[in-house]
Length: 275
Image (tube, rainbow, N blue to C red; front, side, top):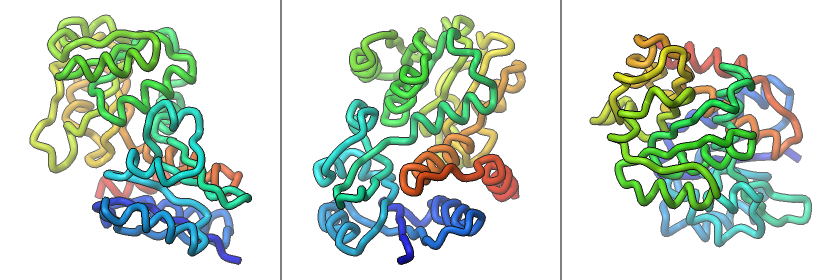
């Protein structure tokens, strides 16, 4: 019987996940399909019931449902429970629905693929304190990064994440600018830099240390103003496309027990986005 998967969100038409997963199915000769489904917030509970009833093997969850889907699931992975957010649902053999979050792990895979695994002792600065920052912070901690600082316009939100981590510190964006040369890894986790964003730089990179690793979770455009500015200062650049591909690949592995070719997909999507 053909398996089928989906991505649910509002909006959803822009998602590149269907193209990515269907390409992997074709490459790996897997009889499966992946479709986008537009679901509004008030329809979510019925949608989850329908996906389960209609036999979906699993699905991805995007904005605005990552938190609100949790009450409709039977079980959560430890990381998803800590984060309070789900981006991947797996229908288990007993029919129960288990929620995972692959966003943070996808970022760490992308980071270590780009720069190696030998930077875990470097001080990390995460700019932003939203859902993406939370996921990345928990995943970094899980993978052995221990010196983590959260910088946000509203410090109290950063403090919340630090308290949940049980380590690290939270500072203002202004303090982050002044202390920037203390950090070896800087991660931009806000929407600044998106193609349609009115904000381009969340903070000044004037004090960026040479050779620092600078990452942005935004992948469209591939080179955000933040990355372009960091590149001028001889930083090692990590764009957001690797995170997008790896979070999808980890979800794919949860569903099917196989890890797809991420390098080929990153190359393909890079060429597509550059056009």
